Amino acid sequence: MKLYDIFVILKLLCISLCKACKPAEYKIDKECCPMCAAGTHVSKHCDRELGTNCIPCIGSTYTNVPNGLSSCFTCTVCDEGHGLKVKKKCESVSDAVCEPLPRYYCIDVNNGSCRKAREHSTCLPGQYINQTGTASKDTVCSDCPAETYSDGSFTHCKLHTICGSLWQKTITQGTRSSDAVCGHNPLYLGLILGILLPVLLLIAILSVLLWNRKKISCCRNQSDNS
Image (cartoon, rainbow, N blue to C red; front, side, top):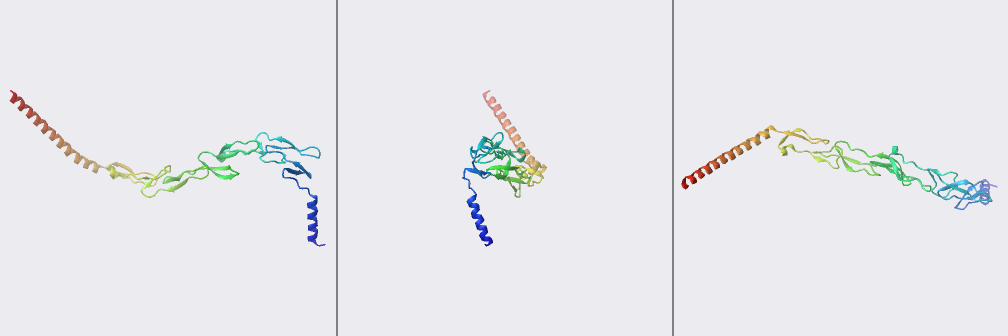
């Protein structure tokens, strides 16, 4: 008899002798016992006279499917040290569901529950927030283009102040992380005074002339009346 023939015979023998359990049963010591329902676990296995003895999961434990377990699973802890908080509390028939803390995003997801989260990236000075971070994605930062700036907290870069448009001089040039610093320009101040003073003097002279003219007119009227 060939080795292959022996293998086939042993396999057929195993199939005939091995008893297959039903989908709602589990095998223990060659016996097929009824499974315990979700939310419970096996306290005592069945025998030829009695069925499986099941008891509820207690404390921070659960079973989420029919089972032949001698103990329940331990509930997941949503650890703040891993950037997590509880989204759904653990119950006897289901595990806890965790989600990221505010300003965190998930980096490890298992069965719809976040296992570990990381804090959103902070944009550096000279960068702006291109995309705000969410519970599933990190913040996306981008560099400011030329002639603009951001301290890292802006959602868009701002144009540098043009000091000349304010009749001021540039004390410090703007960079990608800071605005230009402006100050008073003596040249502009002299120009303003040079224009303003003659205008004020002209107004003063015209006021005096109008006042004198009014006074002369008033005196003539009084002389004519007398």
